[in-house]
Image 1 (tube, rainbow, N blue to C red):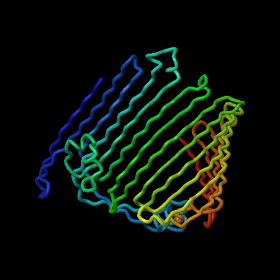
Image 2: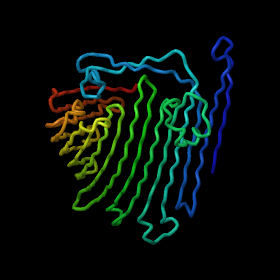
Image 3: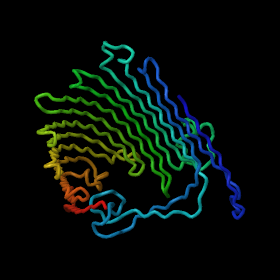
Length: 365
């Protein structure tokens, strides 16, 4: 099936000297196709929308000790002193927003039942978004490499690729997953230009109901490049999560994590570091008497760092003990009102502890 919508608008503004006449287009295309008894499913969504874009200037503003979410360098931290303030220009310009999403789902068992293929599934998703300050040409419309991510005409762009492969190893109780993900961004909405590239390769094994617990073993390999810090980082992480359900309303989980990270400055090879981390994170969720909902978690880890101090201004990349915890409680007073409490603390090396407490009462009248 396929649906196509197209709208064209023309606006006359005789009082404007620079833009007395303007036109805007809106195109939406949606399609879905199934092949081989739905063993192959293809879904597409495409949209082109022309609107006015109002440039913004972003400025870091001091808001008070512990009242913000950023430090003085623009790094997000708990209990920061600064927030970003955005000033919007009163003069708008024509911009074109293009969004495309395509997904393919493979379920061979629907065409070849009672075979090894019933244990295999796969999905692939391609996603692209781009905002331009000009009328698009064919290259922009189809996201051709030589036209996309153009530093002269692109306001914001993001492209992502995600591929999952699933294999049922044992009666839907032991399932393996292999995934590959690529993301890249170009952001020129503010007065500076930021680029990033991320590659992720992950392997996951879920084991359900063995020895009365659910167990997940996950291995992740990541590579990231960011222009903001001129950094290139490679990270490998091994995570083991064990979940135990005591009742239908009470669950406990413990997560063990080991990671190794190597980072360096892209334009200065002598500025590099190595970070090895280990952490343990138990958590608990429970519902009592259908009135009390309680959840809590705590994490304790240690970072061992060697090399230069590159990126050490980021709290989570410093050597030493890293810990955080949170507690959430919700009490339903009656059918129209609830009372909630949220508490959180964090501790990074060479920084003061931060504590946040929030109490809230809600009533629906």
